[in-house]
Length: 124
Image 1 (spheres, rainbow, N blue to C red):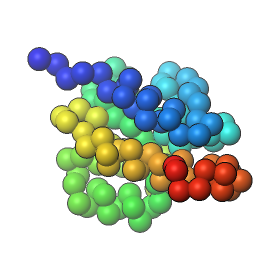
Image 2: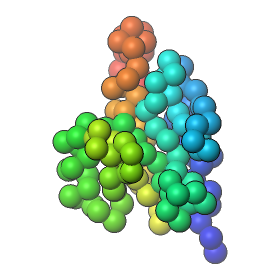
Image 3: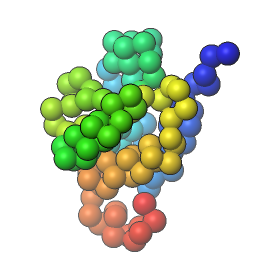
Image 4: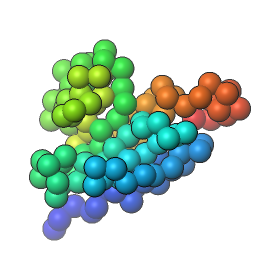
């Protein structure tokens, strides 16, 4: 039985963040706050996903390295944005959605305006 499409769940998690919105770019759904990118879906049907669904998430370079070293079957360096520290997360084979959500929240915090984060307190 094929795995469920992870995009609806990913969309729900991303759009639950304050003022987050979705924009289609490069043929894929991207997730932004104030039009700054914090995540991008990589469809298995395009060269972005390389045959597997994934999400690319803005991350700090040290976090990217630690995640990939800890579990290279789950995390990877995505093309194009990987050299800037972004981390890829495979969304097939039972992703750990709690971990994905935490990474998305961290990516969001890196680019959201400080005034928006201050209004939210610790609710991100």
